[in-house]
Amino acid sequence: MKIFLSFCVFLSVCSSVAVSQHLNRIDTNKYRINLPDYWKPGNKIWQILSDKLPLVCEEIRDKELCGDDCNPRYTIEFEMSKPVVFEYRPVHILSAYSNNLNTRPTETWDIQTIYGFECSLLLRNETGQYIKRFIIVDMNETWRISNRVTLNSYASPPAILLYGRRIIPGRRGIIDPVVNPANQQILPATAQEGETPYAYILKNREKLAPAFRDMFDVIDQKICSW
Image 1 (spheres, rainbow, N blue to C red):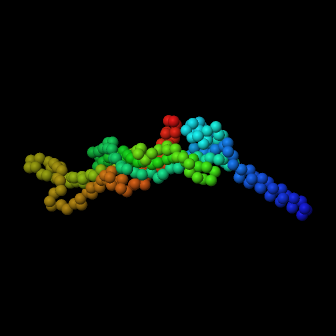
Image 2: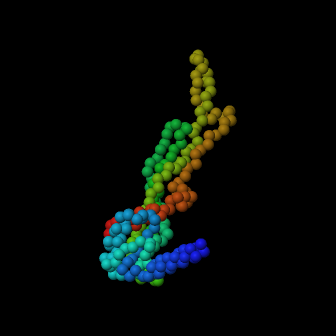
Image 3: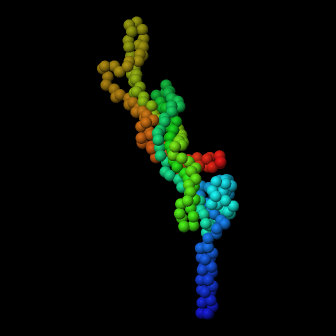
């Protein structure tokens, strides 16, 4: 039994060494592309990159694209910066008012976030040394996303009508509206505080900032235009 276990351990060690030696061997005729999980295997972006990059990169020309189980001479790495917001542009869409005192006025705004970022593909050799950079998106380019929001408008307190009886000689009493008569104490109705789009922007910068998906969509469009 001990001899059998020792033999199994020996085979396991030999197998591990063989795999390690295989992976340590440089595949000079292959290269690899590392992309975020946003672009799953089979996505058209992989086909475009494998078709176009060898045309502009001499190091990987006539070489085979391989997966994770190879040790290629060259690797294409994905690099993307954080977004930089240049400005916010509120665009007024519509105002909603009503004669119904229970319905307060609102305004709808389209808040546009103008931003920029950088994205490149880096060519590295088997030691990780940087060789070339292929720029996909430059910081000089600007992009925008839009968020539509509905904000409360300022509304003054509605006038309160109190009704009293006015007696006209020779006639029956007639009910007339009397606005805030001096001889009666009333509680004033409250006004509605409004919110400007600039106040909304100051409180919601994170919500208005571009997400990684927005930036990946830009990169997707750029690569598909090649």
